[in-house]
Length: 115
Image (cartoon, rainbow, N blue to C red; front, top):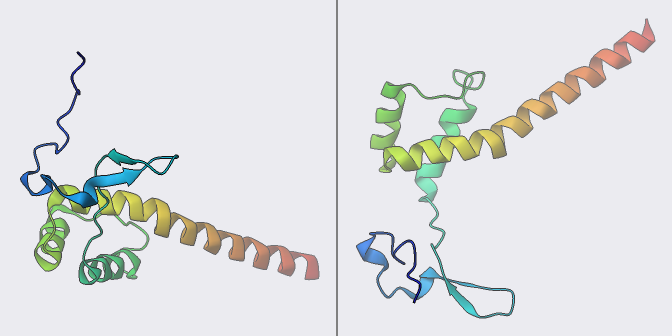
C-alpha cells in the first residue's frame, strides 16, 4: 500500500472536509487538491497601487519596511505578499514595461525615417 507523500490538507486545519478543495480532472471527476484562494479586492487594490506608483514602478521590489507596511495595510502574510509580487511582476509589470519599450521603439523608428 502506497501512502500519499503529503497530507491532503497540508497542515491547514480549515481545509478539512471542504468541498472547495476538489478540482475537476479531464473526465469531469473530482480530484483532491489545493483550492485557489483569491486575495481580498481591497488588498489587491493596495498592492497594485504600490506596484504601479511612479515611486516604485522602475524598481518594483518592496523593502523590508515597505513589506511590513503593506502586510499591515492588506492583512496578508509575508509569504502571500512575496508570492503576489513575484506573480505581479511577471503578469502585470513586465508586460507594461514591454509595451512601453515597443511604443518608444516605434516612435524612434518613425522619427528616424522622417529625418
